Amino acid sequence: MLTVHGAIASRDGRGGTAPTAVAAQLAEVKADLVVQQEWSAARR
Image (cartoon, rainbow, N blue to C red; front, top):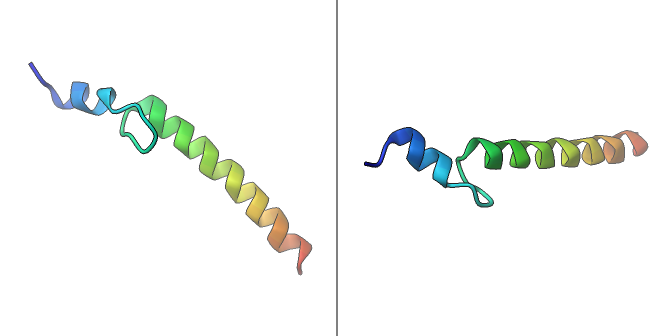
């Protein structure tokens, strides 16, 4: 039987909705944000 939780958890690829995929994507975005902030600060 398909459940909402099971459906969400099964989407663990890049761009997926599984908690592990979301955590990995969030870490990637946070790291990129740091790089962008450093770039911006260097040009002030």
